[in-house]
Length: 312
Image (tube, rainbow, N blue to C red; front, side):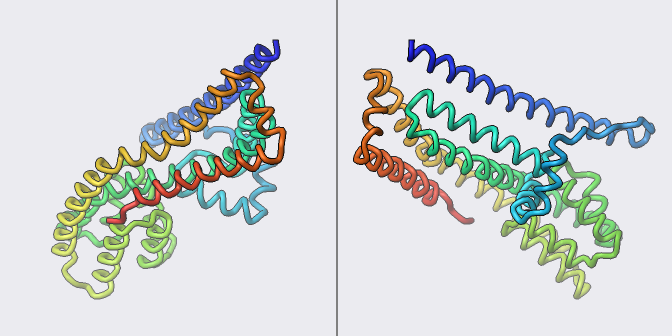
């Protein structure tokens, strides 16, 4: 009966977590649809209403703190349609879900550990989304450089070329260049606007492009030939990055499979000998042993990921 009750509680918690994730996906999809309707209806004058923000009280209080400002900066770099308050509430719900699931499936000792893992996973998710957005932007840089070269060769000023590229390119390059064009429209210098872009999406390729544009704008040199050469270089780097990512995919999968095997062993032991994990973690020696094992798994995870990071 105890095992049945624990499985029932665990299944309920999993369902709740999946329900929260489903609601978030639904809300994000709805927001994207409304944004698309707004963009398509700009010439048809169709009234569009933005999505209603949730947890506005939490959002207002959180933005007054240093943590809220940092979370807001991270969210702006990921492109997610989330406010700091929404992210904070969803993060707390995920942490509580991890805690209860670990307690019901393993032992009460693993609850706080799972909560810490949930906290790390929330911010790791933001970093992953930010890195994925940067990768997508880097893949668009050759096309961006080609558009700027064609526009400047046709006689357009660099500011007009950036505005045209913002209209032609898809997200995320189009959205980021639109921010640059808006900054230029309100009086920011080209150096500052492009510098903010490089800070939001840091990468070597973007730094090279920004440096080329800034220097050419200052010196008045032949920007067309520079952009033509830069386009070829960016294409080569794009292919190199794709090859390196393919070669390292097996190593990255190993980093996730090894901790998953450890968790599977814990579940297997507890299923084979019901109550074994409670007995193991019931003593100080067992708790220390479990913490050392988890630390070694975590160390191995970070070392493998570190070895798989190759700067090109």
